[in-house]
Length: 549
Image (cartoon, rainbow, N blue to C red):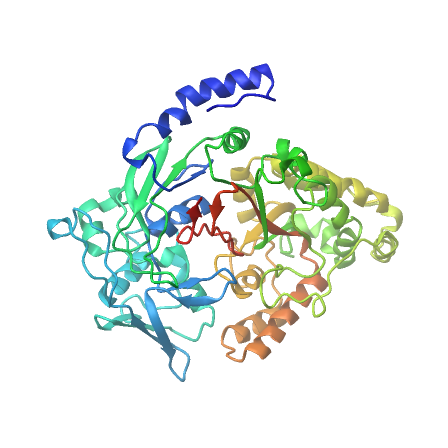
C-alpha cells in the first residue's frame, strides 16, 4: 500500500500519480512473477546494451554480470578466483597462460541453438569471444584490453574443448585482472550470427540469470537460469532469487522515494537532497532510520582528484604558474580534505592523504606513500619560494568542473585563497569537459579514475608518458617513472612489484600533476529483508547469493 504520510501535499500528489501511472503499473504487468523472490533496483542512467563487448559503464556492467561469466572473477576481497576456468598455469617466460575449463557449463536456452536448447560451453567459445573483442568490425569499446598485448590470430588457441591457451606478445602481469572484466565475458557464436547488431537486446550467456523481457525505458526483467552450474556450500544450485527487475527512473530523488515505499530493494548512493536527512556528518545512519534500512559502505577503487596539464610544449602550460612544482604542491597543502568530506559528503570517502593508488588495493600503504595534509603555513612558504609571496603577481587560475561538483570545487577555491592563490571555478557539461581534457585544452580540471580491474597498474598507467588521453589526461611524462612502470609490468615477485608501485606513487606525490581529493566509498541503502548482498571494491552488483526474507 502506498503510504504518503510525512510528505508534502505536492510531493505526495506527485508520488501518487507516479505510482499509479509509472512503476506501480510496471510492477503489475507480469503476474507470473507474483509471489516469487524478485530483487528490484533502479538504473537512473538507463542501459544501452546487454552485449558485454560494450560494457563501458557501471549500468551495463551490473546487468551483464548477471547474464554472463568470465574465465576468472573477483571475489568480495578482490582476489582473482576461478569461474569458467577451473585452474590455470603460466609458462616459464611468463607469456603463455593455459586455462583448464569447466566441463559442466551450458549456455542459456535460446532460439539460436537447435531446438532452443543451450549447448555445452567449450574453449572454442573463449577464442571466438576474445577475437570478437579485437575485431575492428565489432567496434568494441573494450578492444584496448587485448590490443598491443595479444596477437588476434595466434594469441588465442583452443588446445581441445576444455583447454584454452592465451599467448602474450610480452609479459603483462595484470592480464588476469583484465580477464575478470565484463568485456571478457564469453558469448556463443550462434547468437551473434542469428541476432547480429540486435544481440544488444538478445543476450545469450552462461550466467545465473537470463533475459525475460525488456521494455526499454520502462523495465528489464531477468529470470533465474535453471541450468546454472554453480552451487553453494550445501550443494544448493545458485542463484537463490527467481528474478531481477531493473527500472529506469531518471531521477535520484524519485528513486529514493520509491525505495522508501518498498518498491526497490536497494539504491546505489543517495540523492544529495536526502543525504543530511539519512546520514550523520560522520557517515552513519541517523537514529530514526535505524532498523528501517541497512547502510552498506565499502572502499571503492576510485579516486577523485583535480588534474593539472603538464605538457611543457603547450602554450597553456608555458604561461601558467601551475608549471611550477611548488605552486602545485602549495595548492595540495592549502585545503582541509577531512573538513571537506565531513561537511560536504557526510564523511563518505577517505581523505586522499596518500598517493593516487586508492584505499582498497593491497598495495595501498599510507606509511610507504605519504601524501599531502592541510598545512597552511607550509603552503604559504612554498608559494613564496616559487616567487609568489602571498599570491603576489599570481594570475587567476581557472578550474573546470561539472555542476554536480560545484560545491566541492568552491570549497577548495575558498580555502586555497587564504594563501593568496585565486581559483576561479567554471562549470561545464561532462561531454565538453571530457572532450577538452582529451585534447589537452584544459589546464586545471576535475577528474576521477575508477578501476577496471583490481591492480595498481590500472592507476599508475594514468601517468605513463606513452599513454594518450585517456588515460593520461595530465600528459605527465617522466623518463624514470616510465622505465619503472615498464619494469613493474614484467615483475613476478609480488614484494618487489609492490615496492616499484609505491615508488611510482611517491613520484606522483612529489611532482604533483594532480590534487588528490578523496578515495571513494561505494554506498548502498538496502532493505532489511535482503540477505547476502556483499559489495566489493569494484562496486559490482553480485546477486548470486542474495535471498529475501
